[in-house]
Image (tube, rainbow, N blue to C red; front, top):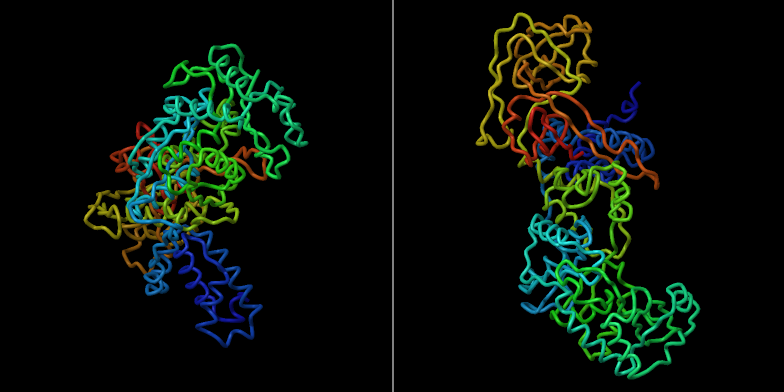
Length: 576
């Protein structure tokens, strides 16, 4: 006996499961479904345990179905629920504290030491959002005071990444252009005895900070430190021989405040400043002063910098500068997908991934090749918001949002994997006019003529039995007569839709070869996932030949994909 027969509510559970899944990007929630069910059938509360088991089972089944098929099934079961499921309130970010119209100034502060990733897009969108909401200004400011890390190509990569995200800025700056200003302020601190030079080894400095032990150079004051500054500029010291430290408090509860470094020697040519500077400010020193110099009203960033806030505020206080408002959120991660250059570079070097735009990564270049659109990242940012909880997301959140957004813009095409030949008898040639999108007839149709054979997907072929009647989508019904290793032999079985047990997409013999690439997470429980990229060969309808690379399409019953190359073989990066 079917489990649902004890309580005949299976169809009700299924329709609410489908509706909830469609509303939330393809993933239903059991509790929400139970709430809907009991609202319609309150007499079932006494049978709660049986109900929960059924709901959990059906929700699990529904969540395995592609979103397009969920929509199609709900259209048949309960079209009124389908319309309600499509209605979504546009979520916005909360009001910004102490924000005044036309007075808000925010910044995009990337270090051009690598390629922009989803975290940069997240923070970038938040800063852009508030600058535009309050009709203020947004500054693109490259944090480039470590010449050993920065490269010209990365400056351009960030600009292209922000442009792809449709984030525009009002002014573009390089922090390294303000080196004379930093030098002036550093000399001022030395003269005021707020800073000193230290020649201790790095491990000695680290241990002293840990133990709260003052450095012997801490007693050096006045002209001696100013003279050392001049000697460094003249090349008297080498890299790692000396650092300039702020004189704060070696017993401060925040270890960051225990006489931090504010300048160090880096003898390496800068991509824009060349070799004219060798004494470079640390991030904290440059950032604290630059935010004031740029008139930043609100610092909006992830809380990985939280321990540095106190130091930067202290530096501003030393110069009697006003304090900007700081709002931070927890840095989010996508489980199994690193953003760290330290983790990614070895994978590129070993050849495990193809480069910074490999579709398994979360760089913006990779997300674009995966078929993620900017609005999906923006919507995800609004959904997660400025949460101080540590959000660890999986790909389903972003992909679910993306599916909903690309559904109306992606044209539909037929393709099959593990193609199986179907020979058809007793059928006249049939010319099918297939719309590129079922909801947008104005996009036109393509014409395909079925003669006496087609190719269907291997999975569909495997489930067919002798006597089965199925429909070739946009064609007619055929009945299986016999199956051999060479082909499936069928005969024409009329046009009655009700007679067909299921519908199958197909291609004809003018199809083109294709490769579908399915990305997965790079790491599972900290271990490299050797199966993180699956490639599947198949054939696609000839009309795909006309689709330009960079276009997002939907392969019917397979999902959305990004046309990554369209030569002799069409390469499609699947988004799910």
